[in-house]
Length: 57
Image (tube, rainbow, N blue to C red):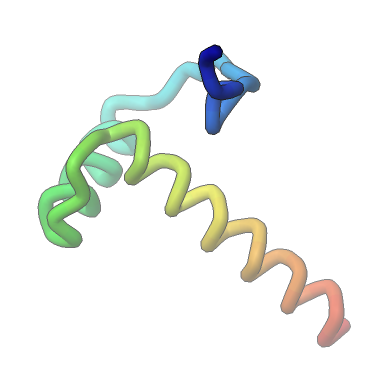
């Protein structure tokens, strides 16, 4: 019996070259194994910052 996928929802997004470069640099600076994981971490950080900003305002 197989386990359900850890990340069942997939999204396709377009990035500017500058955004792609920044993600690549973040990934290597933080020594993250995959670009996908780096993007997940950046999204989580952005969502957390947005929550904090909303709570403060």
